[in-house]
Image (cartoon, rainbow, N blue to C red; front, side, top):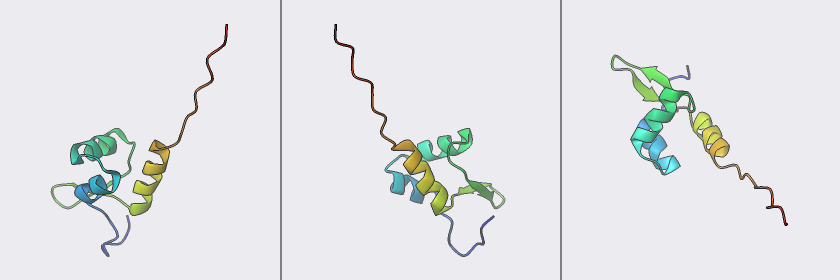
Length: 71
């Protein structure tokens, strides 16, 4: 786990970065799409900025559709 020097982001900070709702961030973490660390007695989620950036890139790739066949 990264050192506790303030380099980890909270659910709210990640949600703001991704322009998403905090519930979505928790759901992505619970499903394994977005890696998180559980810290403290309550098991609060914390995220490395690099993991958030990788998640963002993976979710914003452009997929081009094949052109429709011309009859």
